[in-house]
Length: 215
Ligand code: B1M
Image 1 (cartoon, rainbow, N blue to C red):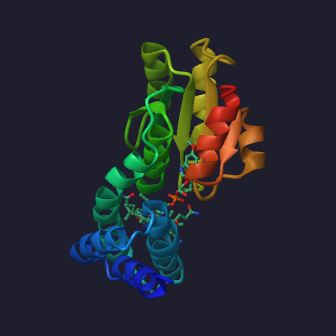
Image 2 (tube, rainbow, N blue to C red):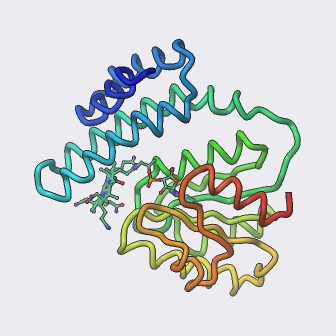
């Protein structure tokens, strides 16, 4: 029904055009498209295309950077709608979230944080390139229930294991649950490193956090 708009959203990411992204997201919301649908049906396919082209040497780092900028501009418009859609008062638990050391990919992690907070979790987003130890220090300081670790690179996903070990060193396991995710991450990797679960996408991460906390 909204195929043209989804295609335009996809294209503005490929073009790396933040202004167009803002305008199209506003149009999508006005047309009654759910924020998460705009992301999953329009924006993410655009990012995936850029990622594929980059891997094939058809697009280059500046294209990746611009696509990321356009995506950030788009999600800034959509985020309030996502928060509103899931608005609820009850706090389900505290989550410390971040992208692991050495990795600066923030879009997926931020989306997971937005969905968690829209679902009723208190989210403390530590940002990107977060040192392994910081996850543990913050989890203790904030008395967190869940630590979420995102990784987008095959070279940085190994750092998720370091975070599990840091939490163990700090005596926070098994009380504090660990959820891992990110494009190269798999369920079996999560199991191998001793995490409590793997979230394939933002919605799965929310469902998992609820299950782990018995909500
Ligand atoms: Co990067 N990059 N990048 N990049 N980048 C990828 C990841 C890549 C697959 C592209 C490719 O080659 N096809 C490739 C990784 C290859 C690999 O390791 N296998 C890659 C590379 C190589 C690099 C650099 C090394 C490039 C270079 O410098 N030569 C460099 C690394 C920098 C670093 O981190 N040290 C780099 C840099 C960048 C930019 C900074 C330019 C930019 C990010 C901008 C930003 O975040 N502000 C960027 C981008 C945009 C991408 C792609 C195109 C898109 C990533 C994205 O935002 N996806 C990406 C290709 C791709 O993924 N198609 C690529 C959309 C987002 C919604 O999905 O992050 O997967 P995602 O999150 C999902 C799920 O994974 C899950 O839920 C989210 C929502 O559904 N999820 C979780 C994520 N975290 C979770 C945590 C959870 C649970 C679920 O629980 C805690």
